[in-house]
Image 1 (cartoon, rainbow, N blue to C red):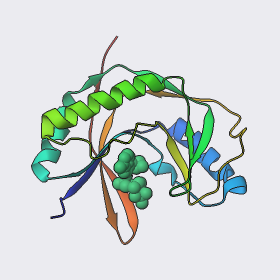
Image 2 (cartoon, protein in one colour):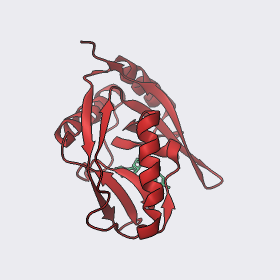
Image 3 (spheres, protein in one colour):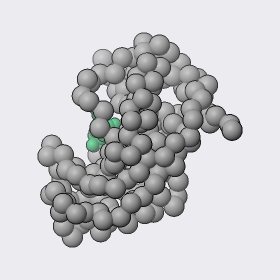
Length: 178
Ligand code: ATP
Ligand code: MG
């Protein structure tokens, strides 16, 4: 039976970073073709949870609001390509270990709070999808560095209607003070 929710944990950029990511996504068209991610959908998936029932979504919403995380920085300085889907992405190694630790923590939270183990054991590869159905970018792309200062994790529900994807934020975590 189809469950009412399709959930994932993500970081959402602030408006300044979003605009810079959107510009890079737009400029990559010349080399890569394909379709840019709409600016309001640019994000980093920290943990994809997948289908969930209403009670599970509610438990996880409450657990996310209680979650307290330290702020961090992820440096975006290189691009890449996933052949399946023709994904052009932006990523970086500086700060990635902290994101991997966060990924593990969120996986444990989904299991403990809502009995939802992560559906895939794909290794976590932090990336921001900039274009889809696109060709690989040149090796030197993007040639700029962006620092992503994050403070909060969002629990997001994804739905599809008339072929259009929608993301809805159900909860955001707290931020550690100090
Ligand atoms: P589409 O499926 O049309 O590409 P989408 O990927 O934006 O749209 P979802 O499929 O709901 O929407 O995925 C939400 C987020 O979770 C996206 O960032 C997606 O890349 C990621 N994601 C989806 N499936 C998995 C998976 N099995 N493992 C890891 N991440 C996933
Ligand atoms: Mg998808």
